[in-house]
Image (cartoon, rainbow, N blue to C red; front, top):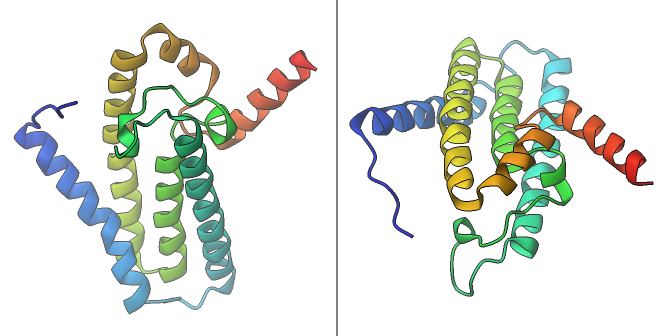
Length: 171
C-alpha cells in the first residue's frame, strides 16, 4: 500500500505539532516541577502511567486482532479492530500519546511546556485523527462508518459509558 504524497501544508503542520509535542519532553528534564506544585506533579505521574497502559492495551489488541500479514507493520491491518480498548475509543494509541504529553506538561509545570503541549496536542488530534478516519472509511467502508457511530473518537468517559450500556443490553 503506497502512502499518498503530502502537500507542503501537511508537512509543515506535521512538523509543527511534532516539535510542539516534543518540547514538553525536553522541558520536563530542564524544568521538572518548576513551580513546586506537588499535586500537579503527582497527577502527572498518574497520567503518565495511565497513558502507558492505554498505549500498551492498544498495541496488544491491534497486534492480536488486526490481521497484519507476516513481516508487515501494524499499519497494514486487514481487519478492523473493534474489541478491547478499541470498543471504548477509536484511537486509543493517539489518546495515549496525547495524555503522555499532557502528563509531561503537568510534571514540568513550565508555561512554555503548557503552551506547546496543549497546542501541539490539539493540532495532532485534528490532523491525525481526521486523516486516519478518512483512510479507515476508504479501507473498511460502511463497517467503519457504523463503528464511528458507536464508538467515540477519543472520549474515554463517553466510551466507557457506551460500552457499559452495550453490555447491559446484551446481558
